[in-house]
Image 1: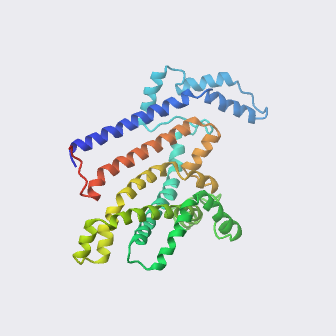
Image 2: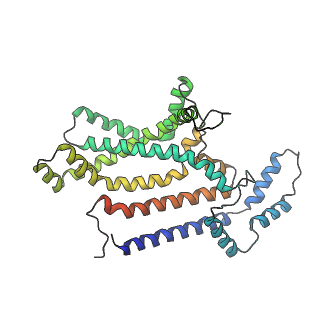
Image 3: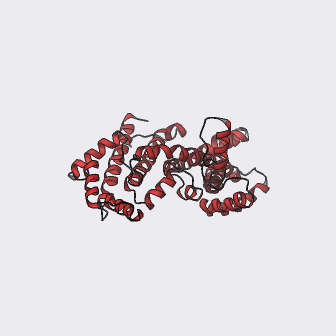
Amino acid sequence: MSVRYIVQRTAIFVLVIVLAVTVNFAIPRLIPGDPVEQQLAQLSATSSGSMSIDITAMAQAYREKFGLDRPVIEQYFNYWRDILRFEFGYSLSNYPETVSNSISAALPWTLGLVGVSTFISFVIGSLLGGLLAWPRIPRVLRGFIPILMVISAVPYFLLGIILIYTLAIVGRAFPAGGAYTFGSTLRFDLQTIGDILRHAALPATSIIIAGIGSWALSMRGMMISVLGEDYIKLAQAKGLRERRIFLWYGMRNSMLPQLTTLALALGYVVSGAILVEVIFSYPGLGYKLYQAIQTKDYFVVQGIVLMLIIAIGFALYVMDLIYPLIDPRIQYERA
């Protein structure tokens, strides 16, 4: 892999970030209406006359405090300055909480739930798909193919609803929602860890089951196309062990498309499995984004969407750099 290619990919990644930040800055300012005035009007409406709010004066004070009354170009450079400091402003619906603190509080829950679940479903699904394509597996295992096709077509949030009904409402084996028992104090001990795992069991299971089908079917298709390659036939003619042929010649050469999809999936982890987190009231970034959209908290939406774009771009950037390590046949040179 040449230095020229690394520089080119890095430049493209930086360009993607600049465009993402620019679009993320521009879109809320193109939306009709003033988000600050809308939030204050909602606060005034829900106060039931218990408090009197001069919406216009307070909105002007907010705009001055957040710099929204300054020229757009100055706001843009201030936006870049704040991003480099990991400052995304204040939450309109939970003022004076900052967007950074809101994201920092929700991100570990999403990474722990969606990130781990996605990786587990990738490993199990890819291995199962490879085995189902291998010609020397027992015929009874091929009966899993129709099951996987059905599972891959079922949305994970629908599986979540089914799991809540069967295992939480009827079976009462697991909690129906939340990340831990309400009112409990989070500590780093076995009791707290066990409580968190019990609450994460159902949402994680829904993500894993739904993901296994898709990973397995795509891996099976890639493995079938690889089985006809000359290097597989040569390895078999040389009398190599079946396990070595399967893992090093079959699975390894079928993994590139899977890894690209995994990079995209891990990039989307930042936003969380929104519907799963909403259904289970799980306090991750997906649930936070859902609440921010409901309350028109534009600054929180901006922060989460920007993190999502950066995470996807960074994941693809890393995958481009490690492709030659996975498959030495790939060389980044000019023709």
